Length: 169
Image (spheres, rainbow, N blue to C red):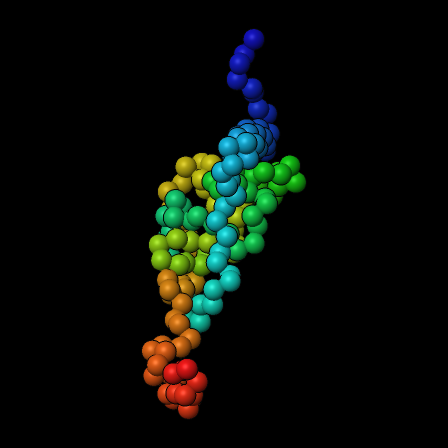
């Protein structure tokens, strides 16, 4: 008996790879849930405003610096391994497209040294699965710390409003 499965084509091999990766993700999610750890990818901090974002454009990004997502927290775990069976066909097609046509750049948002995926979750997942170190990305850069709305000291701003008497009480 041969312990290694035999494959008749690339699609069946890639489907097998997906299944193995997905099972690792499911087991990891189960263990994380039991131990009380968070297994989902980091979520882009949308509650903060980033008015100073700028498009850097096409850049080569280190795959390990992609830590989160803008919107797909239930489809992939924190290591961008697929969690659902519904991702199989798209994941396999993405894997095969890399060899045939190459990939379009992904779209990411950068805060500090961390990147969050907006478009290209399957490409990031496949890139990590096959051990790619870098991936092409269109990058939006956000300031690491959003500016404060009121930069004047409290006493000075109170004086500007004509409420010195109220603040003194």
